[in-house]
Amino acid sequence: MMLICRALGLFALARRCTASNPKILCYHGFELCDEASFRPKLFISPALFEQRLASLHRLGYRVVTLNEAVDKLASGRVEKDTVVITVDDGFCSFYSLALPALKRYGYPSTVYVTSYYVEKHAPVYRLLLQYMFWKAKPSTISVSGLPGIAPQQVDLADAQQAEGLMWACIEQGEQRCDEAGRQALSMELGRLLGLDMAAIGKQGLMLLMTPEQLRELPHGGVDIELHTHRHRFPVDQREVAEAELRDNRAALARWLGSDWQPRHFCYPSGEWHQRQWAWLDGMDIASSTTCEPGLNSASTPRHALHRFLDGEDVHEVEFEAALCGFADLIRLGIGRRKVSGYD
Image (cartoon, rainbow, N blue to C red; front, top):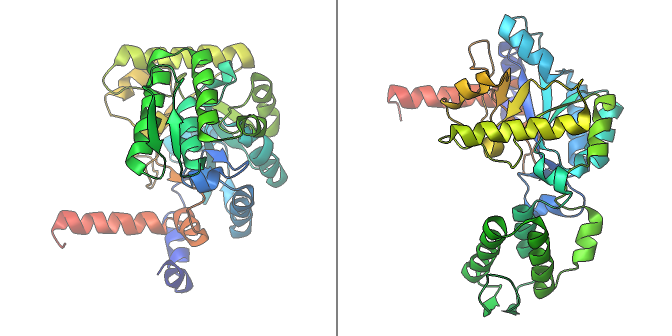
């Protein structure tokens, strides 16, 4: 259907109608091994990301910094066909795979960095364990020697048994272990699952960038912004949320120096509430991005900016539909029909 709409010229019409609505793209990790098969919404292959950049160039979109887009959006002076590229979390694969591609096209970008796993230089624990269970061959294993986990036989081919063990290990690590304990638990679990943990470590899977790599990013046209320290920003705990931003800002400032002045924020996991906007204002945050699609305009709340979440599971025509605004116009039309009682 999308292909037919494009062929009929509806994409071109939508682009003219939404030319003054800046589009913000959202990425996370870039595939080093097989992560795009594991989590296609979270990871994208380097080849497909390169294709996206080529499409931006071929279709004549103007890629600008987040700073420029936010400032011009507030003043109502957005230039036509503006696109912003944002990347969440700060995976090391951004540095090794995405940054060289962005440099080839001369495109600026913004990376929202969560700092705890940069500081610890350890894989993101929960994501690593989820990957390990996805990677493990379906077999029956004898579980013993895992701290806090009862000895048991687990059939990995049984989704309920496998998930039960996975979440028990995640809970044990996150709630009862320090970082050294989490790493020891994941290594022992990897042995039980029959995985080559040395190879996983060597590939850098689920690792974030190092402070040294972060310091290089501004020289490549990359702005570094805030994403909390421990990837959490609770909607009902103001003190915890504000502490997360303070810790995030302090950690990044230690690595980036006093000249680094962050202005923007990205909600972890895309979870947000309007009550948080006053908290963000109090911490001098100029804008906050969600993971919700939609058209950005001068009337869009600056702490609820829309983004299009791209990934390995997004077809090229879907990507083009998001760029030109066609997908958002269709979504708005469907919403109005439902509100009007036509469905």
